[in-house]
Length: 235
Image (cartoon, rainbow, N blue to C red; front, top):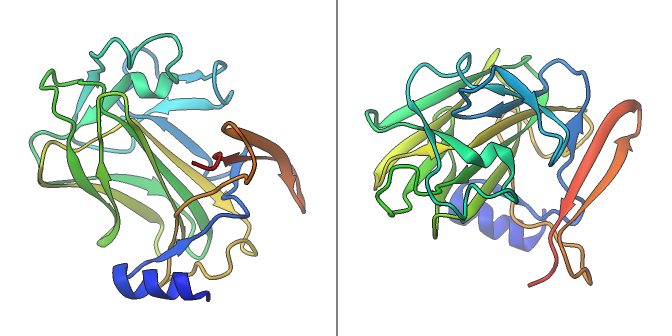
């Protein structure tokens, strides 16, 4: 473990993964491969052909509480916005609200949660709240503006048949979520991730690039599994 990772482990209690080699987003017909458009009401599912060509489903079967809301900010709902960001599920009446995702004990997964406020509540006040995996703190979500999109990724090994992704109110406004993805990973990927240590993405950069890129490919040994690796350009 590098010095930086050790410092982050001591400071925050969670190991951050510096993604020079990117987190892999697996696509294909796999058990446990789930893409959720939180707040979706107009249809049970759809294929997002304008963005990643993945099939997204409603979150109705994965959470029991919350309110489905459309975004109100015109800049957040224009034609350039990824469809998953055009609705949210908000949790105004609870301190802690959890999604339950099916998992296989001992299997490794990547979780990605996405957030865009879009002034869905008409308050013009982007919130801040915490994201948990079960009882363990995953991330603190802070939105800087109505159109600020935040994504948080985590690699973990399931210790039960359900993974609980929870949004917790901390006094900074009402928690909400735009999208949630679950991706099964080969057991050989991200060896440090196990039943007691989860990895979160710190940053993934293509040095020298001038724009955000997506690199397609396949995981060796899984020829039918599409891999999409997203790299940011240096700031």
